[in-house]
Image (cartoon, rainbow, N blue to C red; front, side, top):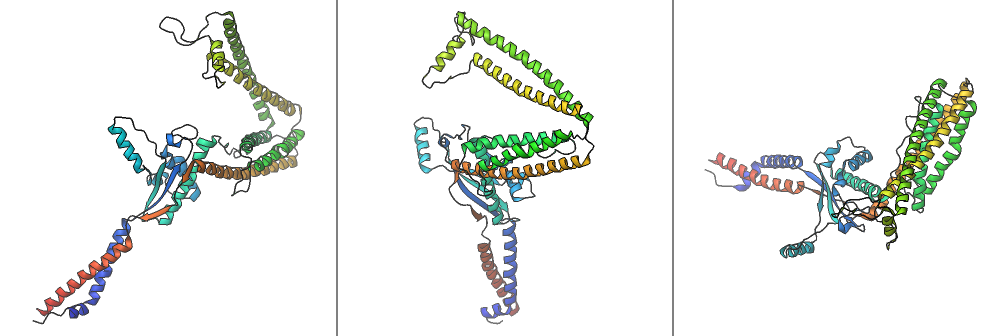
Length: 450
């Protein structure tokens, strides 16, 4: 039997040892990558005035699950053009509250003393995890988009509280007549214009970094459409009495007029009834008759004072405002609402009657060049309004992020981490399998010696 020679065995089986190390490292790498998970995380803080009480600026309760709500995740999918399900992202999101150590001490002390303890966290860790089929950059990008869109949603829902009208410019094609199409575009432009008018008053100095527009700029653009472009198309249609289907259009106007007149008649009846009821309330209180409202007390009398007395007493309180709405208030508000609605309906009715007169008295234009000109003008206007709506939407989204960031801020940049340190696993695998290969080489060498 030969003497034990370690270097001889290792030298003879060195390729086997190398193969074992490579195979072991490959197996460990495959295992690590199969079980790998990348997590992107950041810390956000609710900084609004009522955040310490668990309230949003509008007074609603803070709900951190909105960070990965369906609305936010849908916006993320659109931003990143991802072709995966929303639930696949939502299920990988996690929000963890951060409780300061001194609060834990305070909590224990109060509970031991038998006192009530209430604390609303303002700082949270928001994380998003993905498997090895994605990269760390993907996790970071998605989380960044989640935070950005959450800030925008938070700003719109709890601070801005004025929703941008929907994009109604689509669907104004052949199913409507020319005059109806321009009316749709006109109404849509007016809705956006009213929205921008309110915005430019409350935020006169805001300017979008992405679009370069302020709310005043956008308002002036829409005002030019309403003052010039749209009236020009109206003029072309009405002066030349151009229609796609004159008989159908006339029947529509006749039907609308009949409906409006019936609605006005019903409103008149409601207004008269309300007026009589309001007058009775006023007269009864002036006469001093017990004309109460509210619940009955134990003595059988009404638990509340006279209606007008209640109103006057409440109005004369220190803050100068009525604290509770009375039956009398409700009647007045309803009366005003119906009167306002009635006036708008009367304007619409008069407008319909004028249009009906135009298309009933005149002869339908057979000049195709007129129709082509109007068709082209409508398509151009529709395109302009559609493109400008994109600018408005982008500006509003950026503004919502801007105001949202004042009430919800990030305390740290987004960081990513690995569940498994693959490099460390591979190094350990090489070391372990190297010693395993050496032991195998020694066993093989000694077996041959024997």
